[in-house]
Structure formats: structure tokens, C-alpha cells
Image (cartoon, rainbow, N blue to C red; front, side, top):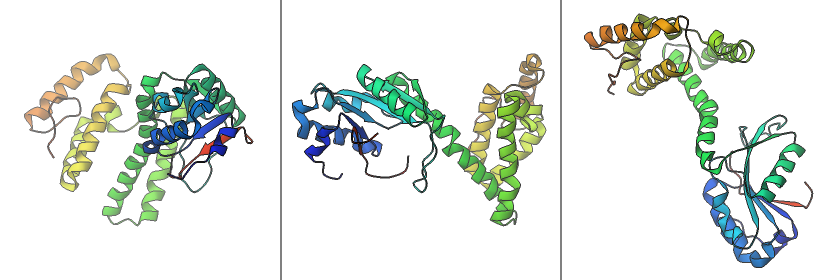
Amino acid sequence: MAAMSRRILQSTCILIATPDSAVAAVAEELSRIGGEELKGHVVLHTSGALDSTVLNAVRKHAAAAGSMHPLQTFSGVTVPPLDGKVFAIEGDAQAVRKARKIARAVGGAPSPIEAQNKPLYHAAGALAAGHTLVVVESAIQLLMSLGMKRSEAMRAILPMTKQVLQNYERLGLKAAWTGPLARGDYDVVAKHMTALQGYSPEYCKAYDALNRLAERILPRDGEEQEGQKLNSQAEKYAAQGASHPSSSVSRAGQSKKIIVLSTGGKG
């Protein structure tokens, strides 16, 4: 962590934009060098998973503490636009007011969140961003294992993925969901599982887990008849010694008014 000077205290708002593991240490250092001079200051951090309690060291000196996190990916290469992006905000009243002002100043949409819900909120972001990339890259690598070049596999997969997301945005969840599981074609799903089991245990387990999650959260046509249908299919696959996605059988295998403290790294 870079050394901080007392010049930081000239600002009325201090924004900590460091990796999560450094936030508490920065707050402790601010407390050490600032002491009672922190009274009336606002100290914010930008972590998605941490809440404002990590800044309790500055609260001891009557500083207002809070967190503001833009739900946006940061590659470390370019600066993404923040217009319209949701900023999750929580903390002391004074800190929340300042965070809302900052978010709106960059075109963001401030959204209140309970401190205890920050980890779940951040997990949602990780699923939608990082884990989406995992799924897409997994599909690309499967095609590459069949002899496709990476560029060819990307041309095959990416347009389809983009189309699903466009359909989801324009037409809604039910219209966007396609594939054998959406149709209840469990024979095809079983063939997928068999093929993936021979390819890689990790791929097979991930596919099985995604099927089970889809069965829980995604709608299908004829939903009222699905319970009976799923039970009969589960019995069929159990009798064959195969796992079914719906069964319980598990498979093996602003200016100077704001000071920003940052040690770099990706968001």
C-alpha cells in the first residue's frame, strides 16, 4: 500500500478504490494520520462485496462511512462508460447522500442496498459477468477439441450467445430460452451428459448443475404438467443408471473535493 500523507485530509470526501483486501488497512491508516481531523469527512469505498463496516476505523473519529459500487466490469485496459449503470450504495446517511451525488454526476443510477446483502448482490454480478464468460469459453473449447480453430469456434458461438441475450432483453425470459431442456427433450440431455462425462468431469458436473438450476428458475410451455413429466423421466434415467437434471441422483466425477485512493487492479 502506497504511503498516504496528511494532504488527503484537505478533501471533504475520500474515495478508497483499492482491492478488497486493502480497504480495511487503508481505513486504519486514515484513522492513524487523521485522527480527530476526520470528523465531518466522508469516506467511501468501491468494493462490491464489502459493506461500510470495513471502514469502522474512521467512524471512531466521527467520519461518515459508506460504500458505492458500480455494477460494471473493469478490464484494466479501457475505462467503461458509467451512464445508466446501477451504483449499489449503503452506509451512514451523510455518506449515502455524497455517494448518490457522485453516482449521478457520472450518469449512474444510485440504488440503496442493505449492508448484509452486499455479498449476494456481488455474487449476482459475478454470475452475470465472469461466469457467463466461463460458460462461453467452455463451449468454444469444446468446438476446438473437435478440430475447429479458435476464430472459427468464436464465430460459431458468440453470435448465438448475443442473440439469446438480445431475445431476452426484447422478448422476455420464456421466449429467449431454447434448447433440449426447454423442450423437455431429456433423451438429448442424457446424450449430452454421456458425451461430456467422457470429455471432462468438470464439464459434465457443470452442465449437470446448470441443468438443475435451469429446471428450478426457467419457465417452460405446459408448466402445469411438468411435475408428472419430470418424475417419470427421473425414474427412467435412474433405472438406466444415468443422472437426470431433475432427479436427486448426483453425478460423480469531482475536483479536489474528492480524493481517490487506489492501488490498481481490475474491478
